[in-house]
Every structure is written in structure tokens, then in C-alpha cells.
Image (cartoon, rainbow, N blue to C red; front, side, top):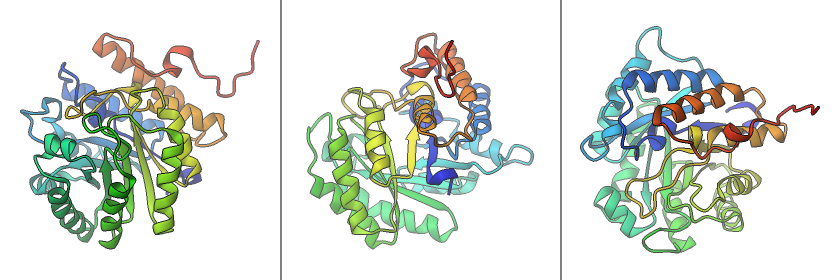
Length: 307
């Protein structure tokens, strides 16, 4: 477990880039990934094993894992994660060196069909055996409930449906569970209630959160999750990102904003915030536009002494 029991999971190379129209060359991805690894974050999601025709930015995911699995390129303590949607994706990930498999199902039937062409129940019946297979192979596994706090197509999602999926995971012996706010509909009180309820189901569950900043509540939701016992926080450099199969794709919580917030609370000061800010600036320059991250624009006030 990471310092102070808080793990930062950088998903910029995957969720941050998947909706971008401009293809990022492999060498630029490696440069950005090297930097976030150097910063001291705990987990980096290199990509997803999806159809490259549907998500062209992820066409080089296998090459990225092969690069970091080769002699001399393997980072130190950082964990390399990859997203898989089906058995073929799991096979590809096993073959190229994925250390932590992320997989999940959507609590929204509409989003599930658009994302995987399966119902929630059908997806769950495939994801659980996949997760067990990866665990038996000695891999780390994180399962998720997508659209856990609301859906851009369906609106509110019943907490009972989310909890039903979580109970299936727990019954299968899978205890690293993420709730993903795919549409960015979450609000802090809802976050607190849902995570507290899950913690009550199994005190040994390892909880993760993945918030999008569609309506400006991303960091507030992260703080509510932190207060509710969540220890894994997923974010993207510069605040990039969004699911291409949701109604209104919007960016993730910015990694540098999240780390800055924790550091202002005296937590995770081991992470090199300036390195994260430099990376976000490089990404901003590459795409030729201002990114959503706030600290990149305003500057850090961690350890600010004043005039």
C-alpha cells in the first residue's frame, strides 16, 4: 500500500487520451508516462485492450506494455495497469506484461450496451470469471461499477443496482472495487452514503474512486470519498479524458489538482507535484489548447511563504 494509505492511479494515458482526435505518437506517450512514473504516483494505466478502429488512441497499448516490460525500462515500485473489456483483451494483457487488470460493468443498461454491446447482467457474467482468472495468474485485479452515480442517457441510477453488482464482486472474493462516475453526475453526499454502505458490507474491501468533472464537483467528490474510507484515487494529467460512449464526455479530475489538494492537507508530500505540472504543460502544448487543470494555471500554494 502507498504512503499514508492513499494510492494515486494515473489514468491519463488511457482515459485521458481515448477521446482525443489527434493521435499521440508512441514516443510522446512514453515521455509523459516516464514523467508521471518519476513523480512518484503509485499506479499508471498505460492503456486499454480495445478495438483500435473504435478507439484509435489505444492502438499501441500492447507496444507500451512491451516497452515497459523489457530490460532497462521496467519502472521501480510503480504498478502498471490496463483496462480490459472482454476475454480477448485479457489474453492480450496477459501476453504483454500487465500487472494490474482493471475491468468492470456499467450500472446503466444503456451505457453498457453502447460500451460493450452487452446488458449489465451479461457483462457481469463474463467479468467475474475474467477477474478470477487474472487473480489465479497472480495478477492484481480491480473491478468497477461504471455509471455508478448517474447516467447521461438514463439519469439517476438506483443505489440498489450498484450495490447488487458490488455484492456479486464480494461474493466472488474480489475486494478491490472502484465506483466510476462515468457521466460526472456524482455529488458529495451521495458519494459518502454509497461508499459507507459498501464498507458496511465488507470492512476488508479496498475502495477506489474515478470521478469526472463534468459539473465541477470532481475534487469535492474525491474528498467525500477520502472521508468515507476510499484509498485508491484515479485521475488524469491536465484533467483530460472522458468516456467516448457516454452522452457528454468530460475530463477526469486533474492529477496535479488532486495531489495538490492532498498535499495541502499534509498528505502524499512524497509525490513530485512540479513533475506532474510539467507533464500537464507538455500535454497542453501538444494538443495546442488550455487544459482544465486549475493548479497548472494558478500555480501551487503548497509550502507558499508569501511576500
